[in-house]
Image (cartoon, rainbow, N blue to C red; front, side):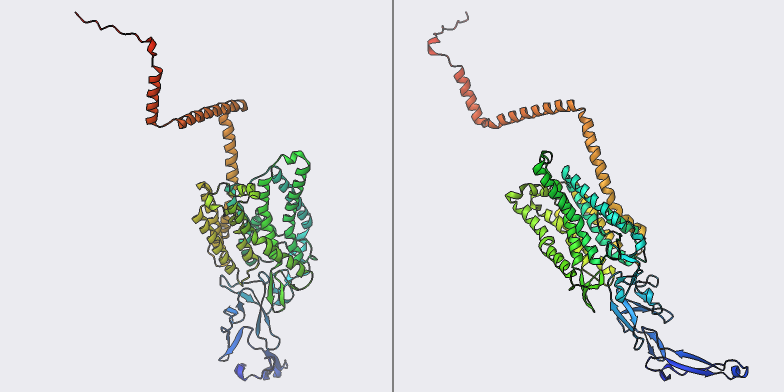
Length: 550
């Protein structure tokens, strides 16, 4: 037997849009079997509407990107969490933070699948709760504040953090003791390693699934001497306390500098060594990581629950003690992070007397018209930090597009300025900045980009080959100089000989410079000759007449 149901519009549905029907089967009753079957008819699936007695995709909803071919699931815009209304089983959406939602795609099409049958799969692995804003039981927030990681993988995290702190102090004292200078050849590379982790950050959010964190992201952060890295400590530590860990490394560096200054006042060994170049070198790292931590702490966004901390949806920004940390971060941004580049540019241009030595370090190798470059070199990190931590779009592609624009702007400024006197330094930094632009474009779309991941990784790590080449070249240069000059004694003799030759040449040049012009020289020479050959009159006797030839 075949039974035809009436059109959906004529079904006796209740308030819950569910109808119950009983179909009687005479044949089944005759055979002594079950004489009726009870079944229910639901309304359209969430995201679908009834049109001409057929459920079709609700294209009028701006949150829906597309629907599947089976008319069952819809795909929402990235950054939205879907849910089913209890009243009428309709689709409702809410804005959530990047990386909170588990995004399942249909091939390379945009949009994230809304699986109304499995509510537990909507959040990223390790997250749960309202808007997926908390780490699930057995998970802890990582140092990058983007993932909830299994606490079994957090074993030894506190030990690693302590070892990193000791390493920071050791490296700081080494730089100060030997007065290590950041050469102009390496400034472009240092900028790259401090920025590439920020560029990769939105891509990492889009690509991360479950407990997997990409190896390339770990590599870029570690070689950039950067926290956050995928390291978790304890599930009891809240996200804003993890953000405070960003201040540890700059505080340790500043304490190392203060300790070295005190040692220089008390111990002659340290007082005889200048550490100005080393302090200038370390200040670049202090600025970057204070800026990172400060922008993290002021990352509050407006939601339906009010202003909450971006990396912990349960933490309201007006609650104590987070409000205190927010104010500290805001004060550091307003009175340290933002003004420092302008202060450095003012000092290098005006050259105050008390900052002469510092200015010489910052402007060494620069054209006179480009003295402001020291402030620009520090400040060009600031837009990338701002975009990485404060600018939130629904899709990582929009964030990376802004990153691409910033990288291109930095490259254009460098090409038009050419601040360094040596063309080789200008060329090397331009190539590194060009690679940064290419990396941002390569990661622009994590899912539809035709570029393979291996090529993207190659572009990301390519600039790291430059310091290796540079160090090898410097070592070879010093070795070759020592080899060409011979042993130390020969070198001293040759140096003394060359110095004496230079002094003689300077003496001759000075004498030539003191000589008068050619006309006066001729007259003075003739007068001198005439006066030197004058004979006294007493010694002059009359000459006889010349003899004539007969």
